[in-house]
Image (cartoon, rainbow, N blue to C red; front, side, top):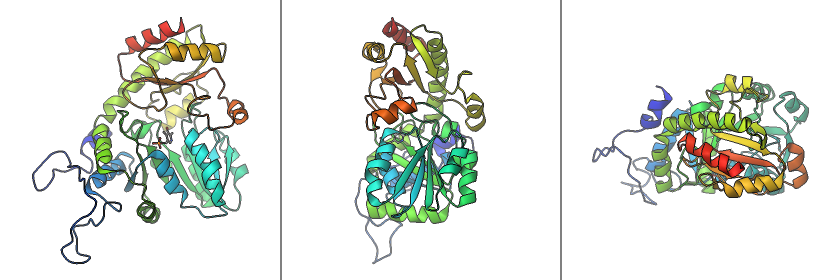
Length: 378
Ligand SMILES: *Cc1c(COP(=O)(O)O)cnc(C)c1O
């Protein structure tokens, strides 16, 4: 089945008692049992809920995986995943990650006796250098946030496999429409469903998909033990949003390609970072491991902070806000906003300079978006 069909049909069937084509929002905390232990597959809604099950079955199909779990946020997803680790374990993480991921590794998990090394994994050889005896997990995000560097999922997964280390890929930026990390050898793929999967900027949520039954069982136990679940209404909203994922991703990409070319030719812009541009240093890898280039781009405004701030304040259709992946276009300043939790020295060394601006290209008409950027840059 093609993904355009899966987003609508995978894991879905009419509700048996009424024939309702859309799944009901099972807003219930518990399920009545016939006799102790004899039930219809549901006991208590922290453990499982039929609306959430529908979402999970759909997500598993989108990522070509067998098992999926949904969470109350992307961060709740990561927190649960990191509880696969024990005191004394070591993690290697790519050096340009979502600010919240960095914060979780350096300020939360570190307190539990789990060390994390951040390194540039665009060169897979760097992973080999950082692996220690106690390395149990490699965490990558590709394209990275906000610098849109690409990491070769296949190469990294191969190294992980040879050393018996888990490889987790945060696939939030591409969504399953453009990239499927499990097919490239990753053990677990994770998403902040808050972004493209839900796509309408009205839910906070997360998800993971895997093909490994043993990992799934451990995670299922953790979800129930930790309670990092989404409610039934949010599960329903994400499932509803996913139905248009294919249409939306195509539109995000079409607009992004045109806007990237426009900005690349604009005299006020020093650099445009978008994997779909030939000028992107890893354009070839982008074409190899992704089926498209997505809707995220970063630009460096000539002159640093002052002109960058002016652009951020002057756009009209591009709203100044954190987050990404919704139908509406957003613009933000990583150094002050999404990546403020990363130390300034580390941030700047990595390339998150004061002139850097990140754009989440929405699905409005591209002519209107370009006109908005033109006036804001004038
Ligand atoms: C937003 C985001 C997260 C965190 O997800 P929340 O739903 O905000 O908790 C993790 N990774 C990436 C790449 C993100 O963009």
